[in-house]
Image (tube, rainbow, N blue to C red):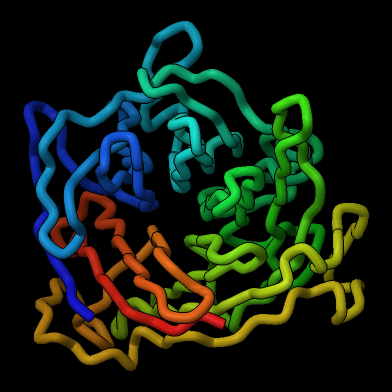
Length: 317
């Protein structure tokens, strides 16, 4: 286990690195990548850097643009999830909308995925049931490159349960189009949210659950979900609170990060474990079995938070 604060409060040209809420490896550039989530009128960007144990930004960030070429910014996108398709296109989920968009290597939007109407924020549309700033947060692509999974950070109001979240599953059809094929029900621990998910193996997810409490700081735990293909489709379930327990995917605790050794890490606010901050991005290499799990924290462009990379070696079921 190791950590690095090498990206914290970095400035390149007129761009400030911060608000990083996702993490992905980009094979075409042999770089790690994260999007800036929401920073006022600044253009939406993907940042790229080298090895997480000693990160160094060695290129300008990529600006994400609408099909007409105008940039997205913090008023039109709140990018929280990032995945890289086998062909090199970037898939980005945004809490604004919410939306899942596909961008080319030039940063220009090429397509978008269907998001059901009830996943919109309450009051923004007649059907919206989501909470503002708690919509599509986690995003991953299966190792096969033919399945995308997106996770809601918090439950829909219509599900009437403060711990039951929905994941959206998209599969690539024979015509090369992404099709929403099912929704999955996932239960968090009390008071937790889902900032990130990552696929590993052929049919498994690693789920990051996070929390924050004033005075005691951040919590973070990792849970494994296996048997994704067998998971019940809850697309037609109006309220998950009324669904049978068998509709909720089983999970297994892999790591409680509050119990990790502190590694003598500094902290800028009260934390139960000074190694922790607001971890929201995650990448997995390997598994089932031994795997390297990398986490990145979202500093919210705050002086009291840190952009921190944490690297763990774990055994995944």
